[in-house]
Every structure is written in structure tokens, then in C-alpha cells.
Amino acid sequence: MTGKVCIGLSGGVDSSVAAYLLKEAGYDVFALFMINWKETTGSLTAECAWEDDVIFAEMTAKKLNIPFHIVDLSEYYKTRVVDYMFSEYEKGRTPNPDVLCNREIKFDVFMQKALELGADYVATGHYCRREVTEVDGVTTYRLLEGVDPNKDQSYFLCQLSQYQLSKSLFPIGHLLKPAVREIAREQGLVTAERKDSQGICFVGKVDLPVFLQQKLEPKKGNVILIPSDFSARKKIADKSLANLPKLTTAFPFKPWQGKVIGEHNGAHYYTIGQRKGLNLGGFVEPLFVLATDVIRNIVYVGEGKEHPGLYRPGLLVSREEIHWIRPDRELKPGEEFNFLVRIRYRQPLEKARMIAWEGGAYFLFDQDQRGITAGQFAAWYDGEELVGSGVIA
Image (cartoon, rainbow, N blue to C red; front, side, top):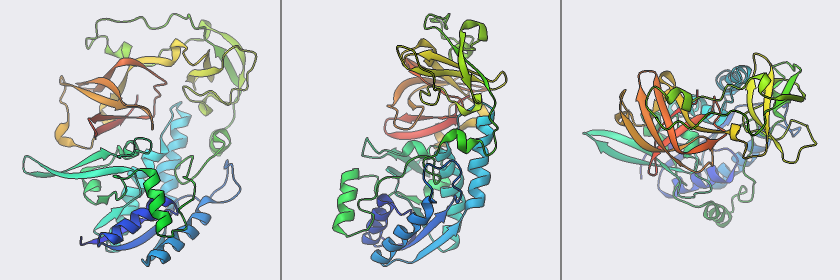
């Protein structure tokens, strides 16, 4: 193979093996390490994660005998990812910073830096695959699931464009995680036994309320328990366009539907489906967050993971939030298609009917879904290909 490739070397085993495979394939490879976050407020560790990571990344580059560079993108990350997080939580929505980081940082600002350094392609250690095909005479890039069902990361790349994919390579997408670690051991890479990163992309594991208190002040409010036999949304047999808004929006809980059982420190710190952090005992089953109202500063909870308030038959993505990785697959208003949909990372793909209209798209699931959350990304697949995505309204 020919061409110059920039590998985003993170200090982990996946990008290390990706770099090795690229070099073995004959590419002219150089490494670029990005610094995206330097603060420790809310972190569950006292150290800056990047300080350790950069050591492992540089040692890997030396082992593979490839040039090593560092770029500081922390200002871009703060503006495009962290500030967006604060804004979304303030509105009572739950953002996905990992998806934003890939769209706004890794495959945008970072990619531009790499291209400026002479790269033809940018490679990462994501568990997904890229396929090049031709549609009506136009070169088209397909984003496919990773072969490892336990590590597939295509969901995190659900906002990429055709241009971004045209410049991207995913060298380990065809491998299982154990095979990646074995290659690292065989090649004597120092990252072979490093644990996978967890928590917010480049920030790490955090105490979310403490992290959010940098911008969002604590504010005492009521926790209201909704009984499991509350007057929930009735089953609507007629799934015509007129009834779709009722089927695809969150149930509008009201204070008088339940009883006050305690206090919280701010509705904007909680998300639908959350179990930990309520600090309320004395119940037979665990409590789960059903909804938040940041205007009234109320957190609604239900007892038990099967509480009907946790389930919805569908979701809505507004027109301005719909993104097609494959623009040629875009549905026009009035058109429908049966996709497989994922509403969070690692969630099994679920069958759903996408119905396009002037204001966006409705998705009706074959089975009601637990914990559909505004601000998260819904990603729709046709088989193993990720076709499009959008922010849940």
C-alpha cells in the first residue's frame, strides 16, 4: 500500500496495534497525540489522564520507529464539546460527548492538523470498518460495524460525513479485541496490558454532579415518586401521522401524579434511567429516574427497572438534527423504511420503522424501548451498515 497516514496515537492498545498494522501494510506512518483536556475538577483520579497517555504513546512510536508529534486541541475541545455538554444538561437533556468528540475534534480539527502535516489519511483504533463502493457512478463510503460484537464502536462515529470517511482508515475493525492484545504482546508493545479508557472522551471517569457544578449551580428540588399504575400512555393501535407525536414524545409527568419522597440538588444533574445518585432508601426495589423538569426543578422517579414510565414506543428526530452518512439513502417526506436502530452505545439493535415528514422523522419500534433520552443520538443501520443518525428530541 502507498500513502502517508497519520495515526491518532492515544496511548492505548487499540491505536498502538493500528499503527503497527499500517506500517506492516506498507504505509508511510507518523503518529499524532492530541491533548484535549487538562483539568481535574470532578475527576475520580487526581492525575491528568493525558500525562500518562502521552508517555505510553511516545514509547509506542519509538518502538515502531515512526515520527511522533503532539498537538494541543484543548481550547477546541472546551468550546465544541464541554461547553455543549453544559448547555445540554442545563436544558434537561443528556448529551453524548463521545459522539461530539469524534465529529468535532478527532475527525475535524485533528484531521485538519494531520492533513496539514502531509497525511493522505487519518487512522484511529476504532472497532469499525470502512468500505469503498460506487453508487450511480459516485464513489461512496460505507461505515460498517466492527467484527467484534462486544467492541463495535460504529455508534460513536454516527455523525461522520462522506468527506471525513474518505480520509479515514480503521485498521483493527476486522479484529476481535483478544487478537488485538495478542498482536501487541507479540510485538512487545508497552500498551499490551493497559486497561481500556472509561468515562467521558478524553476527560475520563468523573463525578458528574461535581463536574457539572463548574457551570451549573446546585439547586434543591423535590423528588416525586410516580406509582407503577399511573395513567400511562394508552396503547394506540392507529399509528397514522396524526398519532405519531403522542407515541414518540416523553410522557409529560405532573407533580400531582405522585408524592414527594425526598430532595435532590438539581434536576439538571440527572438523566432518564439513572439509578445511582438519588440516595433514597426504604423501597422494595431500586428507584430509577423517569423524567426531569428543569423548569420546576423536579426529578420524577419510579420503583423497579420495569416501571412503565421508563418505556416508550418511539422517538422523534427533528429535521435540523438528522444526519445521513449516506446522503443517497435520505428519505423524503412521506417515505418510510424499516431500519435497525440503536439509542445508546452497546444497546442491541432494535427493529424500527422510520417515517419521514417535513419536520423530521419518527421512529416506531417493534418493541417499546427503555430509557429513550432527549439529547442522546439515535443511529439507524441497514444490516451492518450505519446509514444515519440524529439527536433525540
